[in-house]
Length: 289
Image (tube, rainbow, N blue to C red; front, side):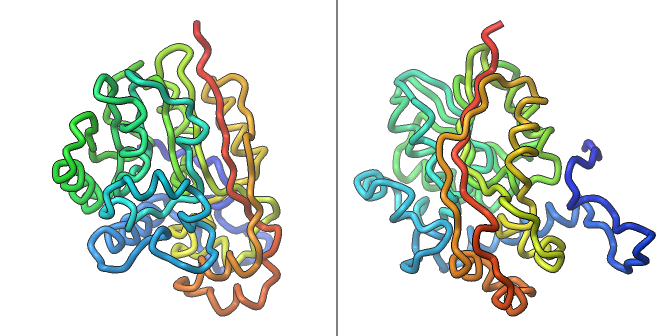
């Protein structure tokens, strides 16, 4: 496990301020994320796609309805994304696709339909309960061109140069080492391959209470970084032509709704959270040589 700290979230408080707050440890972040998605995978409650209110990840605004109705309900029910990376991935029959943080498999199954029986889609997820659920869904619905593997997105369990496209949906922001994630994506891509990700990006600095809340981190908020940092991590990994394809800025009410189960929910409701974060769609390409 690499311990390089690439974000302010992982730095200890300044000694000159005599703050008693402790630095957020990488393993604490990973454990908070695993707990959240394990509960989602094994509970009867729905993820974003099962919600009716206008939240940050309501599937009715992220995916065409015609796509959702043709997917396994077991995958749709636990979707917790903030976008639709398959919409910007330009997938074609025969391609190999890797989904980082695949969860219940909604984007894996969408990709599988597009690459067809001659293609292959790998879903990578660090939560055993999600992997079990996704594998069961694939078997019960006869998706023969998909495979779900347990592993951290900072250490992808695939060989070099296997993928034509790497996608991810509201997951890289959860990682305490985003540069390492993009290095791994670069490694597993073929020359000329590309990434297509949907993710949460900061527009302004987060309030301190929100930034340090592990539940808020597992809810895809506290781990977010600025556009400059995010694009910078992509470039450092070696990618060319990073491009922001689209972004949706969230309202105060949307963000408060997303943080409703976090310990800082009451405080957050009293802070102006409008124009604070946005869902970005970003693409970039691995050089052909």
